Image 1 (spheres, rainbow, N blue to C red):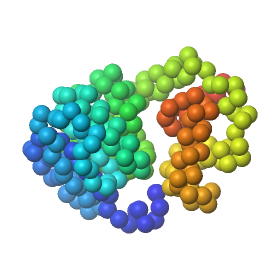
Image 2 (cartoon, one colour):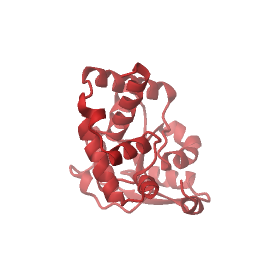
Image 3 (cartoon, rainbow, N blue to C red):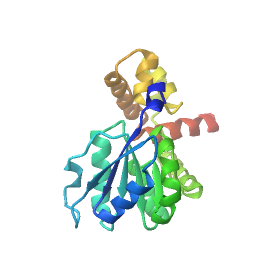
Length: 225
C-alpha cells in the first residue's frame, strides 16, 4: 500500500437488499479511516444485478442474500467494471461449497453475520491490500482444490520458455502479490500495458485467474517442474 493510500479513508460500498443490515454495517464501520457508502438493492433482487449503478470504491461489502445466482452475478459485475476493487461477502452460513464458489468468483473476504460485528472493521484494511480474510480451513481446502484442478490440466509445455523479458518481469511481480498499479510503477509502464501482459500470461499458462497462475507457479517450484 502506498503512503498516499495509508493517509486516506477506505471507500467502502455496502450492498444489501435489507435496510436494517445496511444500518448495522454503517454502525459497525463508523470509525476513523473508513468511509462507508450504502446502496440498497432491489428486494427481491433483480435479474441483472451486474448492471446496477455502483460508486467508485476500494472495497465492496456484499450481503449474500438467499438468491445465490444474483449474488454471483453482482460479484462478477463489480470485479469486471472495477478491477482495482476488492469484495468481501457476508452471509448467514459459509459451507465449503459456497465458500469455494465465492473465492473462485474473486471474493477476498468471507464472514458470517455473527462474525461481522467484531471482525469486519479489522478485515477491511487487509482485504484492501489484496489479502484474504477467510477461515484458515476454508482457504486450505480451496488451495487444495485449485492445485488438484491444475494437476488434472497440466500447464502447456511452452509456457515457461516462450515468455518475453517483460512478461517474465510482470510474472515475477505477480508472484509478489502486488497490484497492477504497483507493477506499472515498478516497471515504469502504464497500467493498461500491465493488464495486457497479465492477459497474455494467463493465456500462455492455460489459466483464467491471477490466483490460479500464482498457485500453479508455486506448485511447480515445489515439484521442481
